[in-house]
Image (cartoon, rainbow, N blue to C red; front, side, top):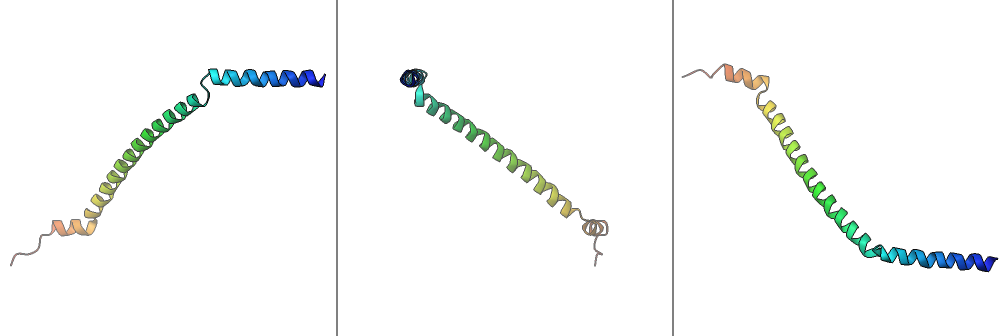
Length: 83
């Protein structure tokens, strides 16, 4: 009985390997991985660009507020006296 079970298990393994090869095997998996990695790289690049744009806008906003501090605004309202 054990021999029959072992023979069925080996036969099932052989059938599984043949089905795997017929479905594409490792070549298909490699193509899928390469496709996913290229898609991931493009998404990463787009995310980097968007992050850089946002940081640049924040920098402009912060630096713009530094220029319009209350002390500087007082200086602009009262021009220096003419000699």
